[in-house]
Length: 311
Image 1 (cartoon, rainbow, N blue to C red):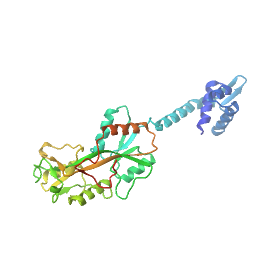
Image 2: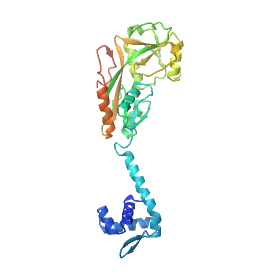
Image 3: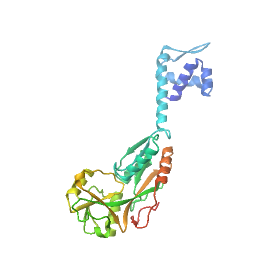
Image 4: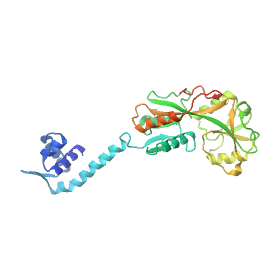
């Protein structure tokens, strides 16, 4: 059923004359008649009785009118739901406790009237495909992983460099250190279950291992951050890396230690990705917020892989 014919029917019903309906719709009276006739053929009933004084609704026309109005209301709501600025900004943050989640919480506090829809996608290929299809508006990622340049229609900007810290239990050999150099970590077992082969964070840690001769183990199932914290607290031989902005809470009895890593400090680069033709006004607001809140990149005494985009 063509919505323009439905709109013409409602206009004619309200006006009581095809001529007035034509003037309201900025079309000819003949076009109004043709549209009404087409709608009557689709429905298989007469909707109007033509008289010398105009057009009056038949019983079938009276029955159809409230449904016609509802059709137009539903159509308007459908258009509004996808009109730029009228739907939530949909952003992928990868994980609920990571740096990207903190960035989006800060954005929400600064712009509470902006509707947000937060999702968590696992790998960068899925995120990029979702951006290109319009399923999401933006994603936080480390870009671009070796051999996987971003498509030309995807824009990115580096928003924050997050220092890595060493997390140990109270009995670990490095637990008492105020800071630890990367060289001093050689020979210590760093346990990071859940590193997904082929992901950008797997590429990051592969380069970190190759550069500094570290031992990172990704063995065993990933039961989540709570299980990881329990194991680190109870196992003196294991430590793990944790982003400085990762939000974690553990029982007081765990006695966990977060130790800065230095000389150099490995930093994990977080970039915002979006489609260059995305018109959502809240996306521009998010980008401006991140630019204002961001810090410098590639600071002295820090390290990132060579494949990380400079900005």
